Image (cartoon, rainbow, N blue to C red; front, side):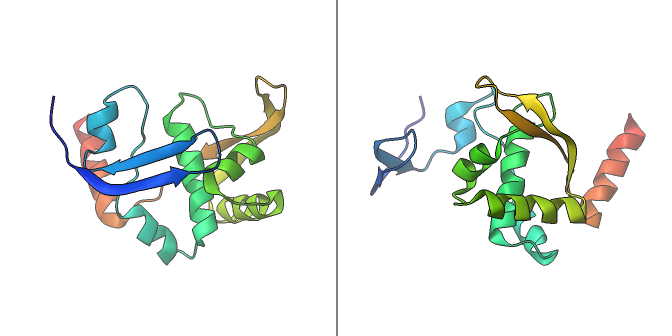
Amino acid sequence: MKEFKRTKKSIDAKEGEIKGKVQIIERSYGEVCGEGGEYYIIPNWLHPLLTEIGLTSQEKLVYECLLRYSHNSEKDPYPSQETIMKFTGIKTKHTVIRCLNKLYSIGLVKLLKKGGRHTHAHIATNEYKVYYIYEEKYLKKIKKTDNKA
């Protein structure tokens, strides 16, 4: 097993399901979690690109939340507004709705079904289609890959 350095930093988790101390270490999530959907990948260039097209930090977090749920499922994501609020730290449903409306308006997210999914608690949630944004240089790589297939 690979050794890793522990930092001297320890944080007290106070909210949500995680209680007590958490440690910050040098090992990546990929090394620790391996395969199996316990992590998701967001390219380093995504946040600056989302800023460049005019998204606020809250809108970026909502988009990231939907990306996370779409990566961990073979179906389109359907997190409730409450789930989005917990993931992002956004305090009001109104703000979540405003962020979703912005994502709809620029085409990053499409509302597939309003109240179309029912969770284990029988709460109706919206179902979303998430689209991915790329700079032109990445589109050229995708085109080359598609041509090889």
